[in-house]
Image 1: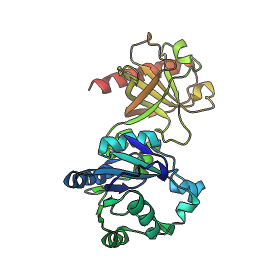
Image 2 (image 1 turned 90 degrees about the horizontal axis):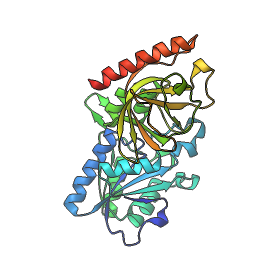
Image 3 (image 1 turned 90 degrees about the vertical axis):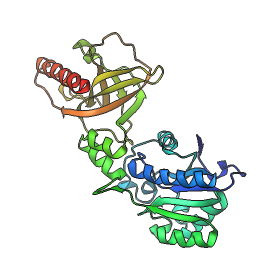
Image 4 (image 1 turned 180 degrees about the horizontal axis):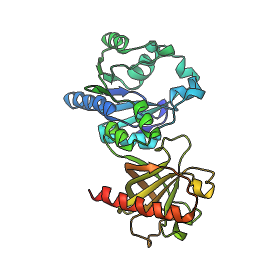
Length: 311
């Protein structure tokens, strides 16, 4: 997968391409529908698909206090876009200058001069250019003048409209199953296992601790059933997962994703990069009055996770 971080990274001999445009945060089912259609056109015309996304999110530049937390980093997004059918990704640096481009200027600079678009496929509600003045109708008219076709694809499935905002709403409520339905894949968090307070080990439930990135969406505080996968070996283990700051012990400074691999206390995972996959929420985060109450609840959580994952 080619990731171009700036317009200057795009090969001069790129040739014509089929272009999809969007933030593509999370690369949910709606995004995949857009890319699938672009893939069909690319196959018909023997061209490659180039996905144009923006870094950072435009709202981080236009209205920083309203910028959403992201679902995926650019590297994760590129991998998901490739899996969906894109051949290359242009992560266009979004600046105040780019924000000031008119729709026509964006078309000429990016679609025509840089990517030599033969076709452009976007979501039906796509807006672009200064003050979001451009839409699918304008893009279609511009294409007729500049020799590319345009298609606007509905981002829905019956009554449900897939969106990154919907996925964030699900995660904020701890609804990892709902988020997974919209994404078309499980909710995951990746990171390197760090040394924690080792209280879990003292209580008989050693955990692999992964700090959460402040700017990246994670499920709401609570306890979940899921899986932990080592990215170095691919080994995958059933797990009970805690997200939060451990309120029973007055909390950590930062939120953590802590995974207890069911019935295993022999795993050495420090400094190993892992992927934590969430399947279903078991309960919210609770502050217990005693360690004994906490341990009893943890045993119940492990039993619930085991039954759910076995099913």
